Length: 338
Image (tube, rainbow, N blue to C red):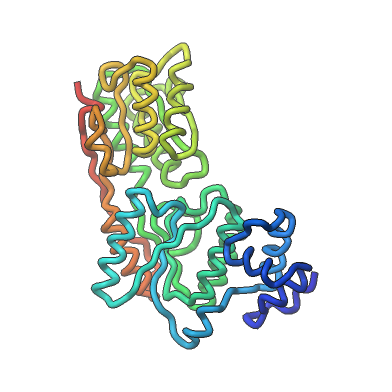
């Protein structure tokens, strides 16, 4: 495959020609709409585009010489935490005269790369990336695309835990986990369990905090059951179901976020158990529904709107490569009382 044409002048027709497909097929794939395109063709088009360094430039033609707007990338913009971040960014953007938009990235590496290429073509001032957006993707290829965008003048900022060399707005997730464990350790329960999610940076960091905090409180590591699942209510439900099938059932559960905790609460009810009478339960994030559950959920309140405002400020300050750290507050409610 020829690679000597890697430059900003590579066209859609170039990609289609090398991939052996029509320009319309290449266009659908590269614009994130691969419906009706065979999987092998979709993969081939994306591989050729990557090799040739193709960047969609339909908006760049109109914006040549100037940049506009800041884009927030998120795996699911409908979640309460992302919505709060977006609201904070938009409010800060209005104050500074900068437009803020939100883009949902796809479910796999190729979809993420396609979205990033399109965004590079739109020439934003900055991309603000929620760290969970790239869970389950090939980090090396994602990093290459982000670095390419940065070389083109796009400032890259993260919100949350990540392993990339970009500035970030962070919560101290290990300390959050430690604080939750310290609270749970005061309840006099003997059999702790943790709901986590492999590959999710924030939840993994909170899990390290849970385990360290429980260890500091005197719990034997071997006595702590750990179950992993996707960060969804269904995942929390399934993980808790597995815990309840153990011979030694837990009497307290520390969930890596509120969605996992809500799933756990439903699993407890299905098993005829109550929180906190039978199992004390905690989450992290303090999404709006957490206070309206029965029982209301003990959790950790994170200032997501402040995170959005801070990320917007960091995105516009291209000279600042330092991380911004935000505080959190544990909120004790009915799920751990009594």
